[in-house]
Structure formats: C-alpha cells, structure tokens
Image 1 (cartoon, rainbow, N blue to C red):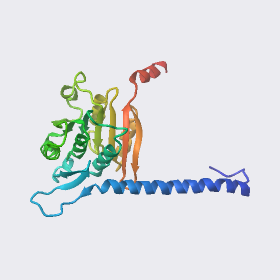
Image 2: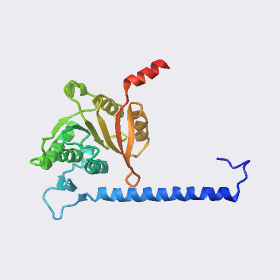
Image 3: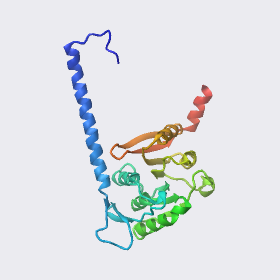
Image 4: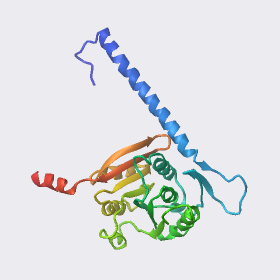
Length: 262
C-alpha cells in the first residue's frame, strides 16, 4: 500500500506497533506448533534394535508395534511421511473422526500403514493400489492386523479411472471415509485420480487427504479439486512440506441451480 498523500503522526505508529508484534508472535507460535507436531509424528518411527534377516521399518500407533516392509524397486511400495501424518491425525482425533465400524477405503495404500492404523482403530477398511504393489501391501496388512482387529482389511486392485463403478457399484458400496496419503505428485494420472475421488465420494462421505507439496502440479490439482469439493485444512506442516485436508462434495443440485440462474 502506498503511503503517498497521508502524513503519519507518532500516534499512528504507536497504533501499528502492537499489530506488528502480534503478527510476529503469531508466526513464531505457528513455527513452534509446526515443529512440535512434526516431532511428535516423526517420533512414531523406530528402527530395529538388532540385525534381522528381513529389512523393515518400525512404527508405533495405538500402542502397537507396526513393522512395515518396503520394496525400494517400486515407487508405490515405499512409505512416505504423509502416511505418518495421516495416521497420527486419525489416532489423535478419534473424538471428531471416529473410524470404529465405519466403511473406509484407502486410495494408493502403498505399504499399508494408513490401512493398518485405520483397522486398529476399528474401521472396515478396503485397501487399494496398483497390481504390482498388492503383494507387498497384502503382506504388511496381514502381518500387522492378524488377530489385532475386529474387521479383516480387504486388499484389492484399483486403477484410478478404470472400471471403478464395476469394482465399487454405488448401490452396494458406500464409504464413510476416503483416505489418501501422497497420491498427488507429478504423475500422468491426476485426471483419473480426480474422477475416482468424484465417483467414490457420495453424500455423507468425508475425504481425509495428506499431501506433500513439491511442484506446480500439486498446487494445480488442489485448485481443480476445490471446483468439486469443499476443502478444509486440518494440518499445515511447512517443516515437512505436508498439508492435511478434509473434504466433502459440493451440493450438485445447488451448483446446477446457480449455473442455470446465471
């Protein structure tokens, strides 16, 4: 804002000073909250105390030790921090987002951490990913949920945008929650992912979606996503470059009515 044409008095400067101090304090507080939350999330990871014949990464959720086997030759079979962020949120916000007995689907489940955490929290989980990832995903899910969960998670193939209605017909499949961690990055299937979100998200469905911001495609996807869905930011973790969102579909009838009126 230009200062031309206005003479500032000392009282003007005094009036401005508290606001500047408040803004600075707010920013410092945000940084502190970010650092504390990020530390709490990342502290859930632990490493094996002894050499074992099988390589795994350890995580603690719901007071349970979870062992995740990664497959470094497959991009989708590596655990990314967004999954830890989403898992932490689900465990620490059960008062508002109670997954017990809820129908949940995870898109791009990868190594299965979010599926496992959701199952431990009592959800009926359908865990989905590409065919070449399913073997490792099924192994992790089975090893970490067997005998621990009320509902046995279902691991199944889902290729975004392809035959989704055949696999999950709306007449028999309604999900209370769609979970997704790090499914948005510079891959060529963002349109198909959008279509999959749009199909699976029915009235009453909530999307909980964690993503790491890297390049412009991520920002563009969020902008396009908001054309179809209401979006609420739940976490903003600059130190991890990760945000967590809650989303739900916009009322199509209201949107169509407004467009017709225009």
